[in-house]
Structures are given as structure tokens and as C-alpha cells.
Image 1 (tube, rainbow, N blue to C red):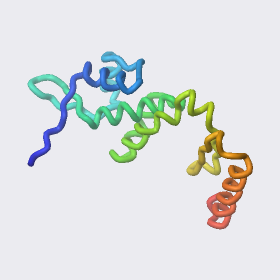
Image 2: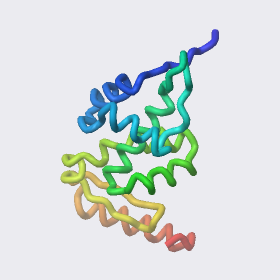
Image 3: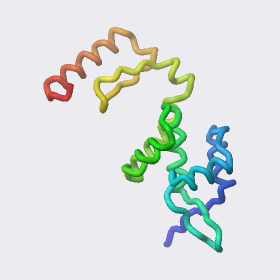
Image 4: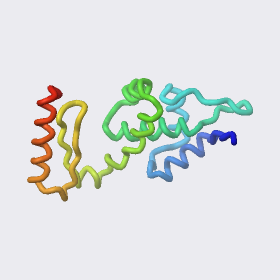
Length: 144
């Protein structure tokens, strides 16, 4: 059985992202992101440019990265160096950047590649033990 790729208009893309909670996503913004090269080239179907699931994944990743304060230019550069799985994974991380999550968690950065996020329900004793253990592992492997 041949799988047919889902095709979307800019309006449909904006509506999907709005339903996912991105109230700021508009048709105009979808088109702007496409025009500045933030998204891969679009397919032309019946003389009109259309969007696919791949474009949705890029927009989800962009939304998440914008929550971290990244500029569109930096986001574009980063996405150009990632594979589809990495882009999809970034897009699924949005819940880590909601106000509620940020208020109810603490993040410890070990280095530029490794960070742990702890719920505030984790006791400080357990959190400190984990941080100490991971720090020792990183030092023994010269990663810290």
C-alpha cells in the first residue's frame, strides 16, 4: 500500500498549530517563515505552494526554540544542521517551556551538552545526590 503524504494550506497549518496551543500562529506568520527560508521548500500542487507534515515539524521546532529566546536567524541556522528526528524531538519539547513547568521545576546545567530538570517535588537531598553522582561520572570521563 502506498502512503500518501498529507498536504496542507497555510490556513490549515496555522489552525493545527493554534489547536496545539500556539495562539500566536497566523497564516501570515506561516507564510513569512516560509518566505525567509525557515521552512524547507514547499511542493507545488495544481500551481499552488502547499505544506506537508515536514513543515509542521519545522514550525513546531521553531515555536519551541523561540520560547528559549532564540532569534529566527539562529533558529534557521540550527534547523539547517539537524535531521528530521532531531527537529521532531525539538518540536515535542514545548511543554518544558510553559510557565507552569518553569515555575515547578529546577534545571541544573552540568555543561553545554548535559542538563537535568528536576520537579520541585524531588527533595533537595535527592537532587543534590544525583547532581553529585553525575558530576563525578562526568569528571571521571573528562566531560566536566
